[in-house]
Image (tube, rainbow, N blue to C red):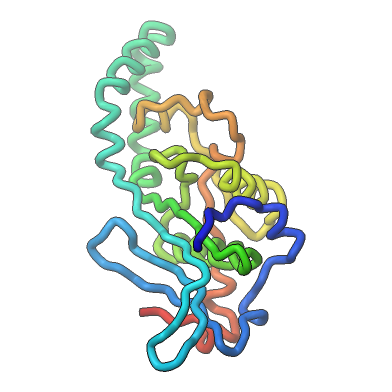
Length: 221
C-alpha cells in the first residue's frame, strides 16, 4: 500500500538514491500527459514477467490552474486594493498593480505542484522522484509551488521536503514569493502561512535527466 512521503528524516538517514543506485530490474518511468491537469506522472517501476510490472513509488506533477485562482480572488483582490489605496494612496496602489502585472503575472500563471507517494519499503527513492519533478519544471520553464498554497493539505511530510530543499540543497533554485503580488493574484495572505519553506517556488537544473545512465534507467512515454 502506498503511503504519503511523510517521514523525511528517515529518507535522509537512509541516503538519497540516484540513478547509479537503481537496481537492474528497476527503472524510472516518466509518463507525459498532454491536455490534462497532470502533465507528468513519475514512477519507480520494477520489471516483472511480460507486462506484469510493479510500481513502488509515484510523483504526480500537477499543473496549477492559475486562471481559476485569479478568478476566485477577484473580490478579495478588489478589497485588498481598496484597503491598500486607503493606507498608501492611489499612486502607490497603481504602482503595486503595475509591478504585479508586469513582473509576476507570467511567473504565477506558469506553476506546477507535486504530490509524492512511495511504498514503505522504498522510502529512499522519494527524493529522486522529487528531484526529477523539479528538473521537469525547469525544462518546461515553470516552477514548483508547495501544494498548500494552491489548495493542498500542507502535511508535515511536505514541510520536511521543502525545508530540506530550502536549507540544505544548494543545487535547487528557490525563489521567494512576493507576498503583496501573491495576495493580489490569489487573494491569500502569505503571512497566514506558518511554514517558511512554503513561501518559495522551486526548480533545479537537470542532473538526473541528463545523467549518463538516463537513457537506460529513465523511460519517457
